[in-house]
Length: 321
Ligand code: CP
Image (tube, rainbow, N blue to C red):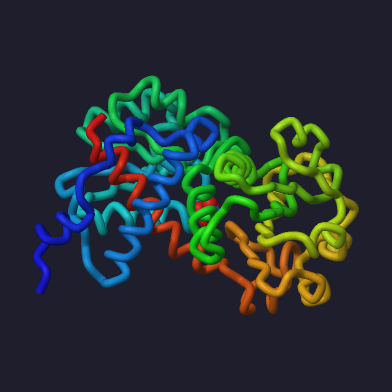
């Protein structure tokens, strides 16, 4: 029988190299900080994988402040907090006093006044988590701000690649699909490039501007052209809810040109890794046989999300910055 104290000792102290109170994006993290989070997540995964709790955040409380819907991110932040011994409170925007005209900042400040230890925020407006971090005294974790960043998604994607391929440096990783609206794309680009990957963004020209080259990535409009040289394909969802005009003539045409299917898989490297942040539109970005096939790491990404979020909560709340 392993006691809680022995489990805490196994995780050890927070590394001195972690100096941040908040996690707002991967753009501002160094390669060393990204690696520190990934290494911490590996340790939590090994511990949690043996069915053990790691109550390093006992008596702490996190608030899920989600102004947009979520399945994976919200659930895994709640589970991560619980496995660390912390309590979680879910804020539901639609039933809150926002409907009476209370502002976003006033809402957050009132919740903080109840004595919470961290805010996990998802908002449709880019920069909303940074604004909150400037206003609050507790750690703020960005769970997705419009099309800007989704840092824990970027971290869990990179962790999945590192676990499967043993490295990031030198790999060719393509982000395929709705790049224009994707916070996951931006966080992946920052994180992967800092760790030495070659990143390609690929999709229709209405969703992939040439201006992405300014971030140091390669731009492609043909999935067929790039598939043979990719080590990883991360298939991003078409965000129909964010489109004001139709980005392509039809979903059928998009699927014809950009869905990962068996025909394209046959031209890929033998060990190609198929990923998707989810939710997926089956048959649009990826056919079901590929999404559920042997090259797919989609559910491993979800499992790694729990470990990454445990690491992020531990580093941000636990360091008491
Ligand atoms: N990948 C992701 O962020 O999923 P949710 O929107 O379900 O959280």
